[in-house]
Length: 158
Image (cartoon, one colour):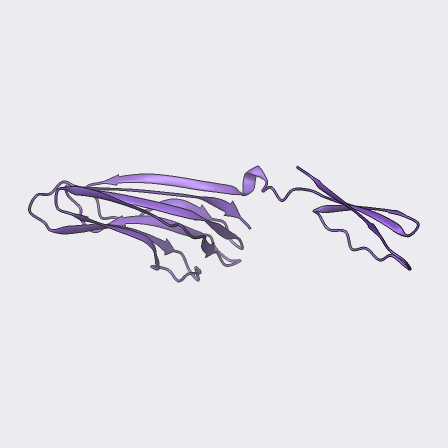
């Protein structure tokens, strides 16, 4: 929903319109109408994956080169083994010159034997890809058998 503000100015009027505002001038009065800052559909980026019985890193979100993604991440894990004590599912960054650095743990869950656990970030996560290459978020399970991990991410490109 657009917001509108009317301002009366005495003296010369100087404006610098941007992509989010429209300025109409009449004498010494200016009306500034702003557009809502809603992201374009192409800038909404989300993804998810389930990885069963594998410890191979699996990509579930790709941030394009030269862009920054901000969003939230959720990860859960289910450990069906009744003898092994702990297993983890981790969401990490991957890609040359990623920010945060490649391998940085964004979210992680630890499951005890024969149990499940879930964690979700309750703060904005920022991931930046350099101009030369894309960057990914990956899910990696610590165990390759009797273990499942699920990760999802929802956000926007800035």
